Structures are given as structure tokens and as C-alpha cells.
Image (cartoon, rainbow, N blue to C red; front, side, top):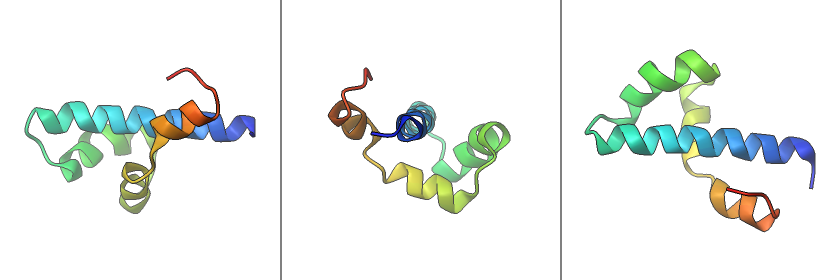
Length: 67
């Protein structure tokens, strides 16, 4: 697969992990987006929501990448 797809999936996985850690603390996903994701990754809220629906870990494993 394309090199860029692997990088994209790694970025998605990183965002998902940040969101998981923060929501376990008890904050909402919108708070995570506004205070942790938006400032670093410069993505819109709809892109953030799309990223939450991507099975990045499974796709990386299918591509043979280390997770």
C-alpha cells in the first residue's frame, strides 16, 4: 500500500488514543477536540468525527505495520 496511507492511519490512531485516554477521565469528545486535537492537528470537527469511525489499528495490522 501507499506510504501516505500508513502515515494517515498512524495519525488517526494517535488521535483515537488521545481521545480514549481523555474520555476515560470523564470529559466529552467535543472537549477533547476543542482542547487537545484542534490545536495540534488543525482538523475540523467533522474530520475528527470521521477519524473516530476509522478502524485504524486493524487497517495497520492488515498492512503489516507495527501498532
